[in-house]
Image 1 (tube, helix red, strand yellow):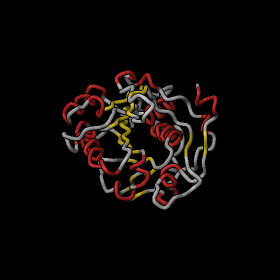
Image 2 (tube, one colour; image 1 turned 30 degrees about the vertical axis):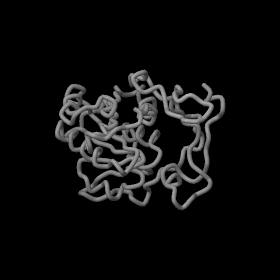
Image 3 (cartoon, helix red, strand yellow; image 1 turned 90 degrees about the vertical axis):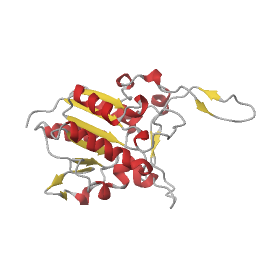
Image 4 (spheres, helix red, strand yellow; image 1 turned 90 degrees about the horizontal axis):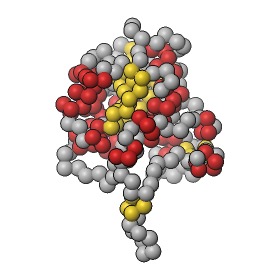
Length: 242
């Protein structure tokens, strides 16, 4: 197998499900830029935000044809728009069946058993993927073993290592790098978020920060414990300020 070098991280276009759908604002892809920061020293990394660009499916395919990725990592925040990421996986494979596809994020974490019926996804990254995805890329290049936690591969149509789906949680969030915001056109994202109160103006500048993961409460109606684990972990105040 030829060694992989170019990795493209993708946010699908939510409008692929409904072109009349309106987002309240375009959100910086923090998770993709964090993954990008983890692997950029070893690989040629690109972030494609099809949602921000409002790419049509054909435009998205052309972008991939131009970039010629070895691996495409896709993400989706919510099951409500699952159709768009399944379409994205299909479009990637239409460009080239040789492209390795990995789906991660919230959707992959909570619905991995159902998702794996879609053969357009070669692998699923379940849970916190910063170290797992990095290890997986090394494995593809013949350096190290296939991840034994938090990663599902396909073997003759069956899930591999399903008993070790969730990766051990990252206890020290301070060891994670700052997101690689330079991989996107940061200023093209909205710089305001609505807040309506009596004594505050409507428009405020904003950015996205990771201050903590997990929750100790465990409410029955909430999936935070499934997504990011029960133990509450936080970043140091200094790094949050930085």
